[in-house]
Length: 192
Image 1 (cartoon, helix red, strand yellow):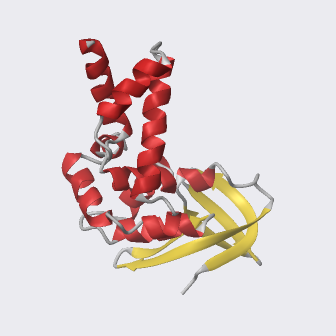
Image 2: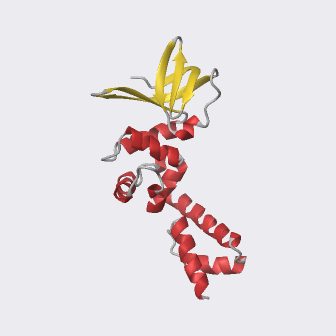
Image 3: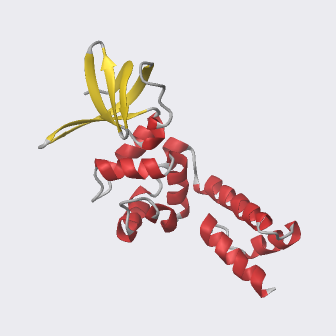
């Protein structure tokens, strides 16, 4: 199968590009995370690919990093998720953000992606749990540490002092996500 293409970037029409490889123009659909990091048209580029054969045609999907391609392939394994939805997820969240959302079971981050409803988001969280951490290096512990730092920063930005923020942080569950943690911390601080 086609695993990688190197050539001249001939056209950029989001989310599709045309890569000229020795006179053959390959049309590839790419997530916006890849699209924004592509060089200008006429420049040489290398993309990792995923080739899909369906009854209505052959499709190529391109990615700048192995982590993006791996996440795309994991998303395709989730029941009810097709290539368009997988591209939408990777366009809405970086691979690290997706991995952190799955590790922390943050439904709210997935629902914000166009085309992802509550049931689809729940299915994604369930079926991707533990599968993205190996490729991205984002484990539950790293995600929780990032969430705690984000919660603390949000409280400080809202005008609470470090002592108040630290006191609220001590009362939060250890594995709480960023958005839920900020809400819970604000509730705790409003009671004081």
